[in-house]
Image (cartoon, rainbow, N blue to C red; front, side, top):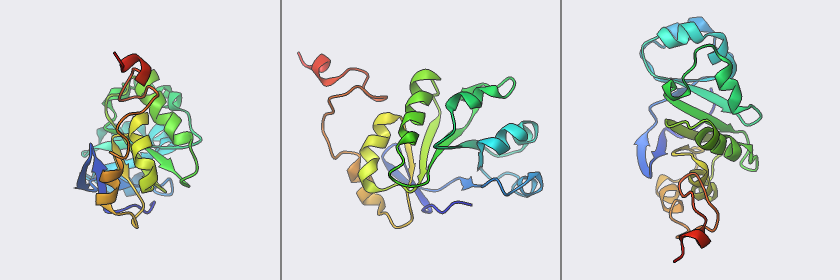
Length: 175
């Protein structure tokens, strides 16, 4: 299991962490013991155990590592991407920017409407930019302060570029 705070920031509000983030070392037997628990499983487990996972009670999310491609989600037979409760993108280190591109691809290319969570080595300085790329749930490191994380979402009033939350760049928004 990966280490994360016992709280999340979802849509600019602090909430208790409702998800149990599992790693690939757990097999189907361990998943059966977590009946009714909301879990996030790595993409490889989700693809391998699709039948079992989709039939279990409780919500299930998919964990993407920063090197994985969003199109892989569509490789499972009969997958409705918007049927996935949450897609969590793992940031192994704060300087790994590939997760930003994954969130943007989920929102823009695949039109994913559900929750997109950033988890792992997430710091206050990333919060504003993560939400601009399409993340609406942040699960930072345990040493981060939730109030600071929420304040960071409002560090900047305007951004020049278009984003997942504002499709028009600043020069197009000006009259």
